[in-house]
Image 1: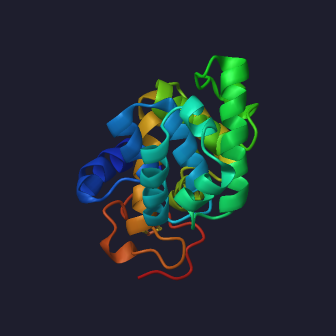
Image 2: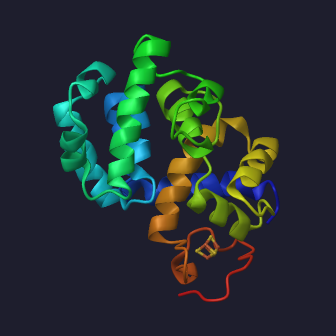
Length: 218
Ligand code: SF4
């Protein structure tokens, strides 16, 4: 695709995906504006379906919505609240560890830069960038498997890993789209540009897409 086509792609997807349910972390960010809840919900969402993450977040935040409240819960109680998210035992441990670190090192406040967020146990680039972008409006792009796959299929970037996609997007994607790009691509990836056999026949941006690597579609 032509680099300028990304403007059209973003605008068309913004319009077309309005009726779709956004990813749980994005809708939670919209509702709560709480960096702490964005951080914990992003951790819960890793390797977990959105519907399951949504229930886990609801259960957990009903018990505790600050680092101090979370530390009052036992590991077992957190496990019961978040089950069956992927790796629920490890995630319960990580949540408690992070809460301790937030209280000890950051006066209970979630740090606002990707660099500091990356220093927290269990926080990788995807989580750090999403918290910085959605929690603090920082200029970061969260690149997960959907963002990586679709950006490559469109022919907008040509990269082998999500991390390389992040750097490539930061080079060429207009900054005004950075904060919404993840939400748009995740929603698009779950509904139309699916990992296996995307719905190219009903895709609203098929005219702009190079369909790189697509061997089977519907
Ligand atoms: S045309 Fe197919 S591969 Fe390209 S963005 Fe649309 S659904 Fe994805």
